Each structure stands twice: as structure tokens, then as C-alpha cells.
Image (cartoon, rainbow, N blue to C red; front, side, top):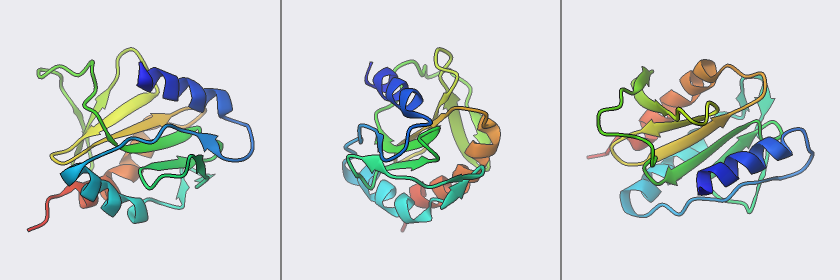
Length: 143
């Protein structure tokens, strides 16, 4: 339900100026560490959209454009994801595509789940490919 509310807010605010309202996740432990590593690795421009600001400000949230692309690091495991679901691998990262929300994708890693909403005219595969490298780098456990 929370994911649906976030998606609705993002799509409603797409095209509006200013900060985009996004509920930040609250990762803990290994997930928080991975998300802290991810924040500075994220691109300033994504699929032609400049990095914007979210409200409330959080190191676990990134938005591009007017919120048409949004990332939340450290979210819970997707409720609809079954153990037998096939993940789409892009640049070494497995992505779960929510069958009921075609704009919602979750990177499934060993340390954190990273949710990405891709709206508007953007091609999800291109956006996910651009985010997969930083996500893989940040979520790979360090020795």
C-alpha cells in the first residue's frame, strides 16, 4: 500500500516545480551502509533529466526531472515478489518488475532492495541500465 501511495504522489507531482514529495525508506544495518555508498554514485543526469530534490530530504531518495524518475534505497522486499519469480538481469543486477505497477522496478541485491519508478516518456530498460552500475558497486559486500 505504501508503494502505491509513493507512486501516486510521484506521478501526480510529475511536471510540478520544486521538491517532489517522496516518503524516504528507513534502511538498517547492511542495507543502510549500502544505501549510504549508493547516494554519491548516482548520476546527476538520467535519461536527459537533471537530478532534482525530494521532500523530506533523505540520502535514501533520488529524483530526476520533476519526479518522473525516482529511486528509493533500502525499501522492504517487494510484497508481490515470489521466490520463483524470474528477475531481469541488467548490467549484473537482478530487477523485479511489479506486474501490477508497470512503472515500478526493484533491484534485488544481497544487501538492499532499491526501488525505481520510471514514468513519462522514459524507457525503463535504459534508465535501469544507467542505474545498475552504481547499484552493483554500492551493494557488493566489501571485505
